[in-house]
Image (tube, rainbow, N blue to C red; front, side, top):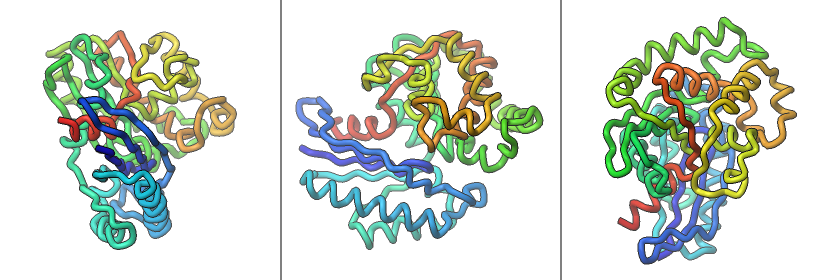
Length: 301
């Protein structure tokens, strides 16, 4: 069976096509398009007209690729930008009319479950771990063991959402940084509390910003697109400080940092630092498997 999975993220639309046989996922095509659905008025829960049309054009291109690969099943999931937008269902209906693609708007809990399934498929969860997926509109946390999902929650603290609300200076000012951290203190106190109980040893970053961290750290496994790789914590901390104190232009000139993440990577670094500092986690790893891979493995099961 050939399956096509579309992940309609707040910043990026992902398409992955794979052959599914004998409980194995064999990826035959994948692409990422910076559709930027959450551009402009994400915190007002509106998909602006330019983003609306850009998203539809991206899905039209995806539909042609899916037809070329003669996929037997198409699974499209929409996350924070669509589920929070007052015109989110208008986008879903327009996508169906123009492309024939049925989009399922999933809850934050369901999103976290798919992320866990994707990370679990790498085989990298060896101890009590905290999985973290930083999206544009939301960030998911999953507390888990190798064969057990202990706790999960999705928070509206995605990088694009926070950037639009708090990132008003270049470089990030101490005042803006304090405002962001105060928001974390108010928003994710229950995450910190449950981590104090279960004491996860490893923070596993699911794709996205963590792939950018790995690329900037010159982690060979990430560059080779393997499913997982350890990240040096001290190296990460030095990189995070450099990102947080850098100007926009300095980040533009950093080799390996894609344009979409030039500013949002700063928010991601502040968030990862806050989580690591307050949970006392000492190990850091990257999983290149994320929601879309979780969906594929769910189709197998």
